[in-house]
Every structure is written in C-alpha cells, then in structure tokens.
Length: 512
Image (cartoon, rainbow, N blue to C red):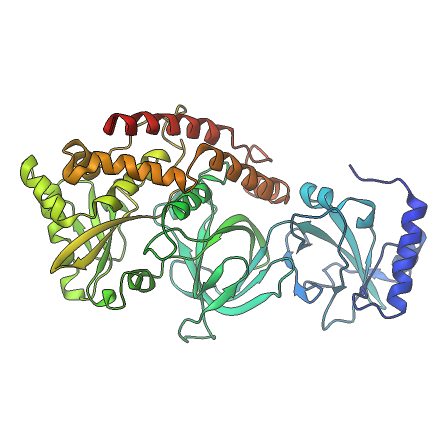
C-alpha cells in the first residue's frame, strides 16, 4: 500500500535533495523529481503538443541501460531485492534533447513494496514542442536484453546482448543467439535461447564475465515454461552442485533468475546458466582427456536432432546421441563396452562387465540423486554418459542435464514413483562390487554435504523470495497468462518430504 503520510516532510526532503543537486551531487538526476504541484505538469503539457509516438526508447540509470518494453511503453530498472530505502539514482536520456520529469513520486513508497508489487511510475518526457508519457518499473532481478535484426530461429542469428545487475557495471557484447530446445519449440509459446559471445560478425567466441555467475563464452536462458513454480530445474541443479566436488567434471553449474527482453518485448522470467564446456569439463580429469574421451546422451529417438545417433539395442524408443568424440569417423567406438553391458542377459557376466567398465560410485550417486528428485526424464532421456579412457579401456561416468521434470512434476501428486534406471537397478540388485554398502555410504555423504530436507526448504524460501519479492513472477504470469501470480512451493515441499523418507528407508534396506 502506497504511503501518503508525512507529505510535508517528504517535500522538504525532496527540496533538500534538489539543493544537493544544485551544489553538485555526483548523482544529480537528469530526470527531475515529481513536482509538489500538479499544475507544474499541466503547464508543461499546455505549452506543447502531445506526441503520438514515444519521445524516448532508451534510458539509463547511473549509466546502466534500462530494458524497454515497447508494447507497454515501459522501462525496467533493476534495483536488487534488499534494502528498504531508495538508493540515489541518476536517470538520463543519453544523446537526446528530451527532458525528463517523474510525475509519480516513488519516494512516497517503500522500495521493497515498489519492487515486489511492480509499481509503474509515470515519467513525463518533453521537448520544446512536444510531450509524451512512459512508465518506469523497478525490478529485483537482473535484466537481460537481446536485440536482433532478423527473427531468431534454431540457426545462429547476429545479436546485441546486454546484462544489467544491480551494483555492477552493465555487460554489453556482440553475440550469436539461437532457439534452444527440441519438441518444446513446437508446443511451448515461451521458448529458450542459447547465447554465444563474440567480437562481432562471424568472429570466434570470446569469454565474458557474467556478474554473480561465472566467466563463460556461452549462456543458456531456460524458459521454465512447463513448471508453474519455476523452481524445480534450479533446485535440481543446486542439489547436484552440492553433490559434486568443484573440480569434478560435469558437476553442478551456477545459475540465477533474470528477466528477459527480446527486441523490445518482455519475454518473462528465465533461468540463466552456462552450458557445459565439454572440453573444459573433460580436462578436469586430465589435460589429455579430450583426445581420448567421448560424451553421449541417452535420449528418445524422436527427440534426436542433428547429432549422430546410435539406437539402443535394448529399447526401440531410445538411443545414444554423440555429443563429443575425438574421431568423427568412429563416433561410437567408446560406447561399445557399455552397449555390450546393457545387452548382457546373464547376471554373472553382467556383474563381471559392470565391475570392469562402470564407475560404480558415479552411477550410484547419479541414481540416488535421480530417485531423490523423482527425475522422470533423466533415465531414458537427458542422461549423459562420459566414456573416460582408463587403463587401456573405458570407464563410464554419469551426469545430469535438463532437470525440469522433477520433484513431482508429471510423476503423480504423491511423488512416490520409483524411477527405473535399469543399469543402476541391476548393479544394486546383484550387489556388484559391494554396490549396496557403497550406495548407503554415498547417501550418507550426500546428506553430510547438505543434501537434506532442511536445505531444500531453505532453497525454496530463497527462490520464493527472488521470484515473488522481485515482482518478476507476477509479470511472467501476466505475460504468459498463467493463473497464479505468486510462487507456491507447497507441492515441491510435499514431494521432497516423501522422497527423503522413501530414500532413507530404501538405503537402510540396502545395508542394514
């Protein structure tokens, strides 16, 4: 609720700030504060003609470009989430002879209220001859903008990229961008993107510093379109981040929520994160691994795209995509031992082959996290197999990707479904190389690293704060016509409670 009390005191404060501007404050706002009398605004209007088009489409706050939604004629300024008081801000219209004046005085409102509720403040823009209005909204999330001259498709498109993070210098870079996704592009109106930073044109990729995230030459912008909470994918990645050591290949990835604007239109809330740098991840196991190792993804054949695909001999619906191999002519040579393992019908022979070619701990850790998160799409799809060359043969390790169908989504309201991962289930059933006791030890290790119900609760509180108190969740809901305007993690909490109890009971039965 907007605070309209102590009006005289606030006016006095504004007068004091105006005096500070006159005497040379470094934050002197080129946008004048809201006048004490509305007659001042009327006088500006009366002396000018109202413009039929916006007078400004580019504004900066303290030198950081604001995002602009042309359809709503509204600018978006990131202010972060913390702090009740307004910071000093210098709103400018660079390279323009347009004057700016706030008609609504944001100083009457608490900063946190203005951000969380998405208050839109009227800004009067005018020249000697014309005037027009636009709006300014303050958001608590970082803001990403993408500009292209051509329609963005699955092919690379030249783009200009900018990222605004409160308290940080803005990042602006040439880039290439394309749509990301497979089947989702045909049935989801809200689409994902991949961004590659360049020096411009057809130049090679360059590394950019992404404030609060990492240094990277690529970024993914995940639309979170099928999950009404917008939390499941992020929760899963944060759990994986706890489970893996920082120097392990194909472990957790940093991530954060952002609001995205594409070609002057508001696109909604996205999860921003880097993709795996396959070569970089492999080198964590040794500098020479990129010359010996390969990476594959288990996938449904209907979703395979441009990469080489080998059908799974044990399943008519799935296959293996080659993401990386040292030799294109022998893309699947490194997978032969794994194919032989999963096709082996004799239990004794399976156990012998599994002990020889599987990284048992990697497989068990994958299976435990997958079961905990009820990751229904990470067994026959989005399961990565890393063929690591070792002692003259290959040792297979396992990693995650695209964990949006998790924590009860499409798995039943109760969340007690067992997710079948045949190779892991069989290794545990046959107790290959002491798999049962090792699974129990890994589960204890995961909990010691913080993979607990208490951690999940704390993370969901954090996500709810970021999505809800930034005002971004409500804007995304309005943009994509969703039925709820504040994040609700109730179902995830319920499913997590069931899964942790289920896993504790199952692991206890493995090694009593």
